[in-house]
Each structure stands twice: as C-alpha cells, then as structure tokens.
Image (cartoon, rainbow over all chains, first blue to last red):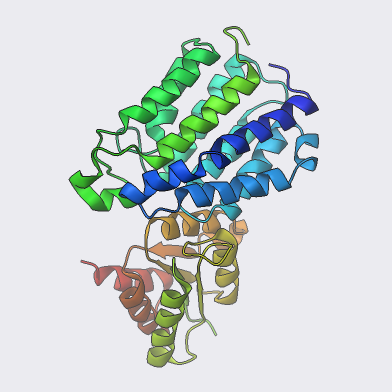
Length: 204
Length: 128
C-alpha cells in the first residue's frame, strides 16, 4: 500500500465526507438511544480535520493519522472524540510510512486494544467495537476492500438487536434494543470510505 | 495553598458553574477550584481543552480531583489526564461520584487538608 500526498489528501477528504454527509442520519440514530449529538459532534470534528488540509496531507501517513486523532480528541466534544481519536492516534503510532497489509493488520489490532482500554469496553456491548473487532477479523483473514466494507455495514446492522451495556444508551436498558448503535454506524462509514479510497486488494 | 484542587466537569456550563458556586459557599477560598462545561461551540458537551485548562487553574501540589457528570465528561477527562505532563498525571484522579454532591463533599474533605486519595474516597463513598 503506497500512499503519496495526493492519496493521503483523498483519504482525508473521503473520511470526512463519509461522516459529514451522514451527520443527520447519525444524529437521528443517537436521538433514539443517546443524547442526539453524535452527528453534530462527528461533523464538527471532521470539519476541523478538513480545515487542517492541505498541510495535513504534507505529513507522513503516521504523523497525519496522529494529527487527525488529536484534532478529533480536541474538537468532537462527546465520548466519541477520545474513542475515535484514540483509534487514529494509535494507528499513527503503530504504522510505518509505507505500510504492508501485515503492518495494517498489526496496527489496527493495537488501535482497537487502545479503544477498548479508553472505553473500558469490549465487543458485545453495542459500541463501535462491535464494528472494529469483526472488521479486523476480515482484514486479518485476507478479505478484500469489498469484503471489509460489507462486513463493516453488516456489523453495524448487527448492533440493532443488541442491548447497550456501555455509553449513554446503556441507561435505557432493554429499550436500547431495536436501534442501531450510532457509534457503530459512524465507524462503518469511516471504514467504508477508507477501504474504498485505499483500494485495498488481497495482497496490498 | 496545598489543599487538593477540585475540577467540576459537566455537559452543561450552567450545571458546572452552579456546582462550583455551591462548593465556594461551603469552603470559601480554602480549596483551588475550577469548572468547565460545554463543547467547543458552546453547546452541551465537554471538551478536552477546557478540562486541561480547568486542571491548570485548580492545580495544587497535593493533586486535583475531577468530578464529572455523564459518559463523555468521564472519557474526555481521562483523555485530558493522559495528556498532562508525566509528573502531573498520577496526581489527578477522576472520581466516580455524582457531580454536585461529589464536588461539595470532595471540597469539604480537601479543605481539612486531606490527601488526594482521601478526597476521592469521600466523594465516592457518597455514591455507595
């Protein structure tokens, strides 16, 4: 996977667009089982990321990812800021400048562990980890971009019948069942945008 | 002043300020105190930069106890603590206590010269 400056800028724009274009949908998901600010929060964060272009794409891939993470931490405002921000920062710390697929598998695993620690959570609690963990399994198993994107969307769908055990939705107990987790939805959108832009093949 | 500092973090700046008013009424100026609330655009929420600033304002060599309201306030506070210089990190604790009552009790405990661990314990015992 070779990412030149043009590709890095394209990646940042695709990530931001995936969230910003779905801000209303994320907000309505969050209004059902949370406090209704997820769309607005993520939009604010990624607008700040876009505002850091073009300089942001001048950085190496690891430095760029760390900067995106820090921007999200500082700007998002809800719990998703530190969670999604930590994912990007840890990914940046773990990836080399021109990562192989094996590097990507190892780095995303580290980043997912960091998100678990930050949220004191794990898969099964109706959080973004319910997307990150199964998507990582497909990535590690050699799945191509299409398979990874499909798993991300399906994993978000699978949070609908789950009961929330972490985050604001957990206050609702059983009433959190029947609604898709907003954090899982935004994670699936970001993953979909990333793999489409990276054109991640089986061997890259 | 070497009493433990208190930081109040709420999604609502009004709640945070109101809780701080109650603390001041109880303990006067005996305890370093700061509050923060709202996202970076002034809406309901919390933000790491605001929390870092509040920790700086309430800084004490004895440490700082942070009282938070809901989920994001806790996650953002933990993130802020991690971003502190290493020598300060271990001297800032997030309390698992209700924000208003916890802040008043923590400040009362602090005003008597108690340690950071004792301040945190007092605030959290209220919860039990």
